[in-house]
Each structure stands twice: as structure tokens, then as C-alpha cells.
Image 1 (cartoon, each protein chain N blue to C red):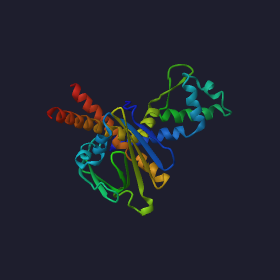
Image 2: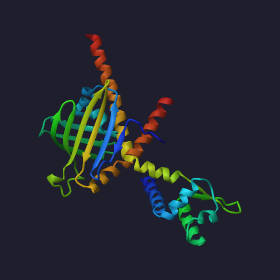
Image 3: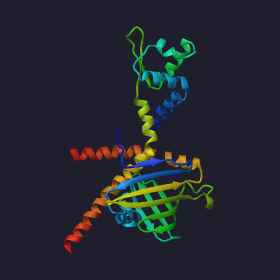
Image 4: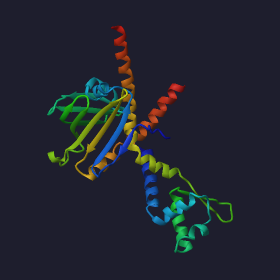
Length: 166
Length: 121
């Protein structure tokens, strides 16, 4: 049942933050492209059982992005925001809103802010994402939300592995 | 959906059972091996019936099993529900693991394409 990769580090350094760090076996420019080019984002960001039929990215400070994620059952989750800092291929700061979730009682000062930092060493890239939430309650809600997908995802991956063994 | 609701219900039972410090202490003791009620009661300043009530809660939550046959009906730990709790808490990590596994595949593919272009030149 354990599917944990030792390369992913998840930490909660404060009540309002989630930090994820992961090493990718690729140069920094390529990892940056995979995160910021719509044709690439569409191919991996949907996680297991989800596609990304729409991905719009205007990659400049003040520019906006909008991702539509769709489940196999047709459920849609829309994530969008505004870029605050764009420093290719090392730093990307943006706001993050999930339509239908965080818009209830939305105030601009309540923005969730996502900061990604990429560093390269020996041809490998460490991607560190810090998500700062407006409150502990919203942070905890975000931690709990992907539970179902995470569990289903691990079973889907098991199915995929079993299929290759057949 | 039904299976998922059932899973949440059993998680609820596990959390409720683990919410009490006496019950957690009993589980900690059982990590050393099975033990009869009298032995489990020793560290606590409460009555045997009270300990038995705690054991019933743990048993209903599936956290312990009690032998039906042996004279002393020793209790032993069943770790499965605790693993379920750990898995629940690990959902966010698994979500990102799944996403990054796909990103790994994409990066491998993109590097393959780059190498191929370099070869062609």
C-alpha cells in the first residue's frame, strides 16, 4: 500500500502554509517549461483520472492563468489566478483561486499565494512550492480536499502497474 | 460512493476510539504484545468494569481483537484501522505524488525529443 516517493517532501512550516518539495530528473529550463507551457501543463497537471481540457497562460507579471480540470465523470474544477513575479526559469509567484470554492465571501486580501522556486544541481531540478493561505481553516481544508482523489489515484496506479504485468 | 461513506464511518469510529487518553495508553501497552484485562488495568486508577468498557470501544472500532477461546481472553492490537488513518492523513501527499509521476513521464519524453533533435543536427 505504500507508494510514497522519498523525493517528495511535504511540510507545514506555519499554520497558513503548505510546502511541497520534489526533485525532478531534468534540467531546470525543462521543468519550468512543463509548469508554464499550456501544451505541457495539459499533459500532466490533471493527476490521475482528471484531464485539463483548457489551460490559458499569460506568463508575465499581472498576466492571468486559467486551468479547467475535468474528472472522468465530467465534474469540473477551475483554478485561476494572476502572476505576481515571473523570473524564468527560477521563480514564479501567483495568486490562486478555485472557482466555486474560494469565491464565497472572496476579498482580494484573502488571496492564496503560491510561490514556486526552482534550483538546478547536477542536471536535476528541485522544485519547491509554498502555498500561503489566508487562514489556517482554509489551509486545513485544502489539505483535506484531495483525499478521495489521492486514494483513488493510488488504486488507479496499481491497476496501471498490474496491466503492464499482464 | 457507498464504499467511500463506509470508509469515512469507520474512520470516525477509529478517531472516536483514539480520542481517549486511557484507550491510547491501552493500545500503547498492546504494542508490546497481547495481554489480559487484569494486566491492562494495572497502570490505571480505575475499576476493571471501566477498563472493560474502554476495551469494548476499542474492539468495536476494530483496533483490538479478543480471543474467544483462551481462559483469560487476552487482547491484541489490530493495526489496520490505524493504517487507514495514516492513509487518510497522507491523501494530500498522494495527490501530488500522482501528479508528479505524470510530470516525470513528460520530462523523460521531452528530454528524449531534445536528444533526438541534437542527434539530427
